[in-house]
Image (cartoon, rainbow, N blue to C red; front, side, top):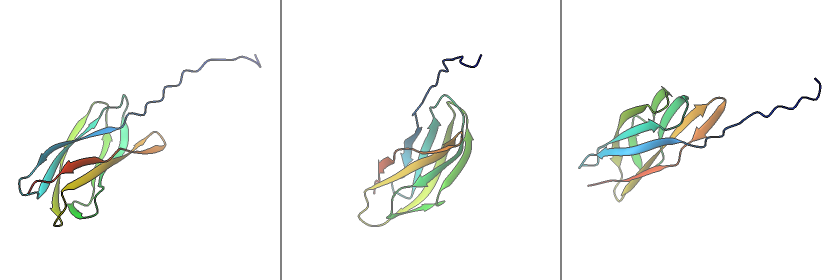
Length: 112
Protein backbone atom coordinates (compact mmCIF):
# COMPACT_ATOMS: atom_id res chain seq x y z
CA UNK A 1 0.00 0.00 0.00
CA UNK A 2 2.71 2.44 -0.86
CA UNK A 3 0.86 4.08 -3.71
CA UNK A 4 -2.65 4.43 -2.39
CA UNK A 5 -4.38 7.64 -3.42
CA UNK A 6 -7.23 9.04 -1.38
CA UNK A 7 -9.41 11.96 -2.30
CA UNK A 8 -9.64 14.27 0.68
CA UNK A 9 -12.45 16.84 0.47
CA UNK A 10 -11.37 20.33 1.46
CA UNK A 11 -13.87 23.11 2.02
CA UNK A 12 -12.70 26.70 2.03
CA UNK A 13 -15.11 29.21 3.55
CA UNK A 14 -14.24 32.87 3.10
CA UNK A 15 -17.28 34.11 5.02
CA UNK A 16 -16.42 36.80 7.52
CA UNK A 17 -18.13 38.41 10.46
CA UNK A 18 -21.16 40.63 9.94
CA UNK A 19 -21.00 44.01 11.67
CA UNK A 20 -24.42 45.61 11.76
CA UNK A 21 -24.95 49.24 12.71
CA UNK A 22 -27.78 48.86 15.21
CA UNK A 23 -28.01 52.41 16.59
CA UNK A 24 -26.21 55.76 16.56
CA UNK A 25 -27.31 58.32 19.11
CA UNK A 26 -28.83 61.58 17.86
CA UNK A 27 -25.95 63.49 19.44
CA UNK A 28 -23.37 61.16 17.84
CA UNK A 29 -21.94 60.29 21.27
CA UNK A 30 -22.34 56.51 21.10
CA UNK A 31 -22.87 53.70 18.60
CA UNK A 32 -24.39 50.26 19.15
CA UNK A 33 -23.22 47.40 16.92
CA UNK A 34 -24.44 43.84 16.45
CA UNK A 35 -21.57 41.44 15.73
CA UNK A 36 -22.67 38.16 14.11
CA UNK A 37 -20.64 35.05 13.31
CA UNK A 38 -22.20 33.82 10.06
CA UNK A 39 -19.47 31.22 9.53
CA UNK A 40 -20.28 27.50 9.90
CA UNK A 41 -17.69 27.10 12.67
CA UNK A 42 -16.52 28.66 15.93
CA UNK A 43 -14.04 31.53 15.73
CA UNK A 44 -11.70 32.80 18.43
CA UNK A 45 -10.15 36.03 19.71
CA UNK A 46 -12.81 38.19 18.07
CA UNK A 47 -11.89 41.85 18.50
CA UNK A 48 -13.77 44.86 17.13
CA UNK A 49 -11.35 47.63 16.18
CA UNK A 50 -12.12 51.23 15.13
CA UNK A 51 -11.01 52.05 11.59
CA UNK A 52 -11.46 55.83 11.67
CA UNK A 53 -8.69 58.26 12.59
CA UNK A 54 -10.70 61.34 13.54
CA UNK A 55 -13.14 59.69 15.94
CA UNK A 56 -12.23 58.87 19.54
CA UNK A 57 -13.66 55.51 20.65
CA UNK A 58 -14.17 54.34 24.24
CA UNK A 59 -13.13 51.61 24.74
CA UNK A 60 -10.31 51.84 22.20
CA UNK A 61 -11.25 48.33 20.98
CA UNK A 62 -13.76 45.72 22.10
CA UNK A 63 -12.69 42.12 22.80
CA UNK A 64 -15.48 39.55 22.44
CA UNK A 65 -13.44 36.33 22.51
CA UNK A 66 -14.96 33.09 21.22
CA UNK A 67 -18.07 33.13 19.03
CA UNK A 68 -19.97 30.01 18.06
CA UNK A 69 -21.56 29.64 14.64
CA UNK A 70 -24.66 31.86 14.27
CA UNK A 71 -23.91 33.61 17.58
CA UNK A 72 -24.43 37.37 17.91
CA UNK A 73 -23.12 39.93 20.42
CA UNK A 74 -24.30 43.50 20.89
CA UNK A 75 -21.62 46.02 21.86
CA UNK A 76 -21.49 49.77 22.42
CA UNK A 77 -18.75 52.30 21.82
CA UNK A 78 -18.85 55.83 23.22
CA UNK A 79 -17.60 58.08 20.42
CA UNK A 80 -16.31 61.65 20.11
CA UNK A 81 -16.05 62.63 16.44
CA UNK A 82 -14.00 65.67 15.51
CA UNK A 83 -15.78 68.50 13.68
CA UNK A 84 -16.55 67.79 10.04
CA UNK A 85 -16.49 63.99 10.40
CA UNK A 86 -19.61 62.48 8.84
CA UNK A 87 -18.64 58.79 8.67
CA UNK A 88 -16.87 56.32 10.91
CA UNK A 89 -15.85 52.72 10.48
CA UNK A 90 -14.99 49.60 12.46
CA UNK A 91 -13.63 46.18 11.50
CA UNK A 92 -13.38 42.77 13.13
CA UNK A 93 -10.19 40.79 13.64
CA UNK A 94 -10.55 37.11 14.51
CA UNK A 95 -8.74 33.79 14.54
CA UNK A 96 -9.98 30.68 12.70
CA UNK A 97 -7.77 27.69 13.46
CA UNK A 98 -4.19 28.97 13.22
CA UNK A 99 -5.04 31.79 10.82
CA UNK A 100 -5.89 35.41 11.57
CA UNK A 101 -8.58 37.14 9.49
CA UNK A 102 -9.83 40.69 9.14
CA UNK A 103 -13.34 41.68 8.08
CA UNK A 104 -14.25 44.44 5.66
CA UNK A 105 -14.79 47.84 7.23
CA UNK A 106 -18.33 48.59 8.34
CA UNK A 107 -18.93 52.27 7.63
CA UNK A 108 -21.72 54.23 9.27
CA UNK A 109 -22.92 57.82 9.01
CA UNK A 110 -22.80 60.02 12.08
CA UNK A 111 -25.90 62.08 12.82
CA UNK A 112 -25.57 65.47 14.50
